[in-house]
Each structure stands twice: as structure tokens, then as C-alpha cells.
Image (tube, rainbow, N blue to C red; front, side, top):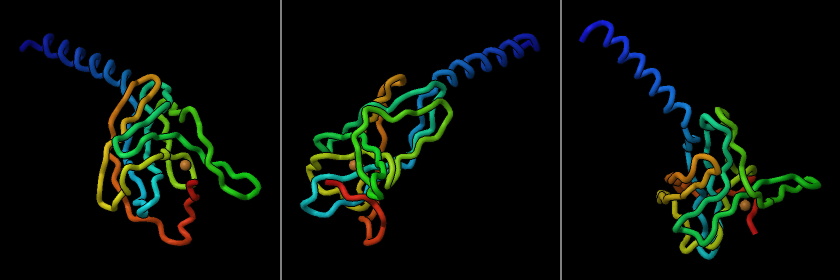
Length: 153
Ligand SMILES: [Cu+2]
């Protein structure tokens, strides 16, 4: 290969690399849920989202394990943390958004069976701009007393 061809190849690589980066969707990691006690048919799942190359919004989620998944935020009112349904979770380009206990979470409504520690299951996330992606949620141990997680009614 001539030196000229090599330089052209490097340039092409750089250009295609840049094009791929321009379309990077949000990157989801550390998806987990609490184990749920028998007889309770709601649970919560949490995850970390690193914003992609464009501003995006998480607008919906679903899983085989539950009838519905709602997006919830937690707001403090008169010293009491209350959950509230929200239409979307904003994921700005290049910024990290964390769904965590006492904060924004995925509410799993109508669990067909309890979430058992050690299990994992797939949740499909729907982003407004970048489309859907499947994430694997791992089930961690149930909360102990004084853990501080809010109750789900
Ligand atoms: Cu909730």
C-alpha cells in the first residue's frame, strides 16, 4: 500500500468513526431491582444512563415480568417522600442520569411472580430519539429495616 493510500485509509476511518459517534445512543449500565416479598406485586428497578451524542428522553419501559412499567420520580412534600408518575426522564447528551432509590425509578406494576435475589430479567427501554434498547436487570437482596427506601403503594 502506498503512503498516500494509507493516509486516505486513516482519514476514512476517522470520518466513519466520527459518524458512528454522532449517532451514539444513551448507554445504560448497572440495572438492578430489589427482591420483592411474596404477595407484593409491585417492585422498582434502577439504572444508570450515560447520555449519548444527542439529547434524549426515556419515555417508556416494559418487561415480561410485570403488566406495566411506569416512570416515577420522588418528591419531598412536607418532609414526606412521595412518588409521582412522570411522562419522561430527560437524558441530556453526554450527561449521566441515575435512577436510584429515593429518586427516579422504574415502577414495575403487576409482577407475575416475586423478584428473587440472583435472578435477572430483561427490560425494554424506549427512548424518544434513539429508539428502544433491552437492558438486563439483576435482582439484589431485599431491603432491610432502615434502608430508607420509600414505600410503594
Ligand atoms: Cu414508584
